[in-house]
Length: 210
Length: 176
Image 1 (cartoon, each protein chain N blue to C red):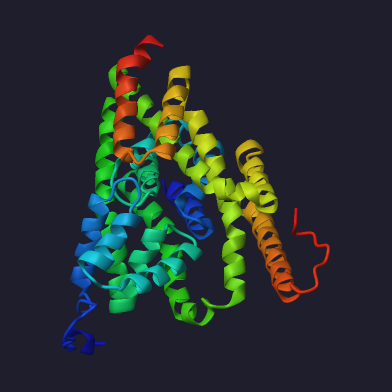
Image 2 (cartoon, rainbow over the protein chains, first blue to last red):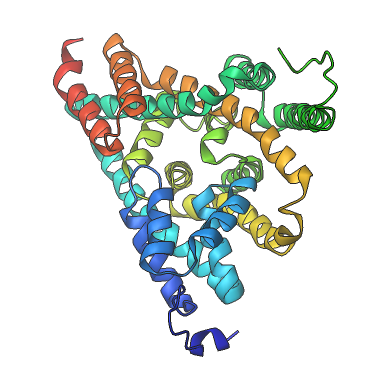
């Protein structure tokens, strides 16, 4: 593993493999400076500033991290640490990422507990909470918009919404039903498209058109 | 106390493994467990903690840490963080070895495509539930609507929207 450190590449696309300490410090800085979602800044930190990964490697690793459960940048900190320094690196990555924000968020929590009975502060926090809800609404709309031309996907999204938001079903059984159903539908669409592509020359009445 | 910590560990390690599509998909279940099942806090307080976490830097799941701390102090924070971030990290480490083999397989693309509508529905559910428990007055609903519109239509930094919402709340909510 160490030969990475000593390889003398004349025009390096990569910096030398980061040490455990560098991984920790890199993600510590990222955690403390990223407001409103860490992904854009993560890319800038990892690809542009430190050059730990090329743009293509970053996209590939992010693809894995988005596919798996958990926050994508949190998974990325684990994956990147693991890639360069094994388990110690993975631990350094995630601890660096969440240590700073954890302390900040608890400082805010202490402030909130000590001041929440002051009527001014109450109104201030009510306004803050309303704005935070607005950001979440905007994010939901952004994720939903691409589904509006896909009735099957929209139906599944609607089922999930009704089950969780209106019927207040627990998440585990809801996902155990909905996720396989959704993947099954996606595979049917995929197969239909593949069949369409094959039988392009002889058009047929198919169910995909509407 | 020990029972509380065990309950936190069980809830958040389950959430950790169910958080396909990121943290916002598990907010409704987190709220259901914390507010309705365990009665650790009212829904309005859960929303306030969510808002605080949004105003802090870092990954968008810091509400987890804050909930653990609020329910059971520093021990709660440690247990909750470990339960929320541990299992998904272990999955990530295990999957890294397999990733190069399966990333180009068709089933992976199908599975990823299939997860998108589920994620979309869950994030929409989060948005409704958080808005419902945040917004006790018409003015709060108006702040939510205005922030949603601005965040959707413009590229204003979210911190400005949070600050603006807090300011409007401070100045105008006493008169509503």
